[in-house]
Image (cartoon, rainbow, N blue to C red; front, side, top):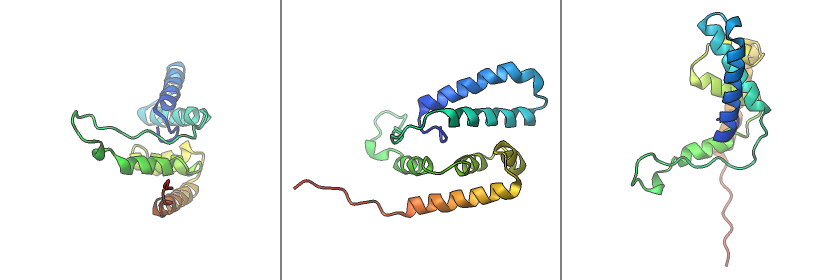
Length: 143
């Protein structure tokens, strides 16, 4: 979802990756190889999808009766800014914080060496911090 920006697009990318997995499962040996291969295919399919310029929808509470004030506004703002990061920084940051892969596996997934991955993570954090620290522009009011 973080790479695509929309749930529907992410679902399409995931479905395509699972179809690829069915075709190639016999060639993949071991859990680690399957995890890295699958993450690589999901990323490839996600990045191949057209980028939607609209902002992601707000996440609504699953509990009936919670007020709209309890929407995950911070997550919404973060997702908007995260989607503005360039590749491979966006993928590097997402994969690193998922904590599913080792640094070496993430570097291989992104076709980087470990030093390049560290540089991409540093750029991603710096750019995301800059985006999050920007003061929002004042809203226009009608007189």
